[in-house]
Length: 276
Image 1 (cartoon, rainbow, N blue to C red):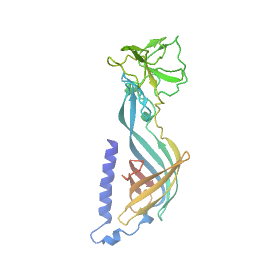
Image 2: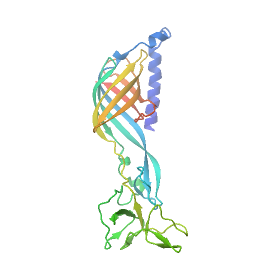
Image 3: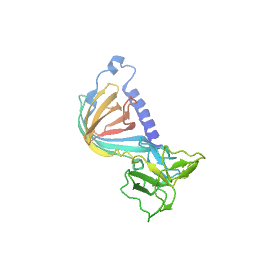
């Protein structure tokens, strides 16, 4: 709700500024005159972005991790949820179309990397493959426990003790074994599973980090413009594109920033840059 309200505020401010700077006496040609000098100085930046992520659940409707593209375990399911990331930092604009330097901090929503209490998480959530915990016949396992046995990783979907994770086979319509895999099939309905085979880790994608940035921008006389930034973080680079709204330059100047809906743009956020 806060994001939608902020976007609406930005749109209203956009219209107010555009109308204030484009009186009827100004010719269309004048409105296309470069106005890059209005974006000059050191700015504090704050942006917020909504994110979608996929929660992975076992057959008992407990969160066990995150859907990452790995093969989904037997009878597991996933559902989409919405998170929020925050981008804060400082940029320096030279008044001639260049972001000469900048630093930033990206904070991901913890719900995208940690299992949320609201999702009834299993004990080993998110699970990893291998788990680093060997199966033992003397341990009482609860639903959600993860173990390694004979080169595979398994998660308990029923409480058990001394139930060796043996792959399911069907002999004369009778189920043998208690560890269900995706290629398991029952002749008489759903299989009875004590364990399920896990195919890969279900850890979330933590996008948090710090880095530096540079970029370019172009502003017209009516205050509208575009900005392209290249973010460098952890040895990789990412290009982000924004629409900007630039009022006359002065201390405390607020430049409204809105991510462009362009193919490949990785940040769907909105925010503001305030001149120091």
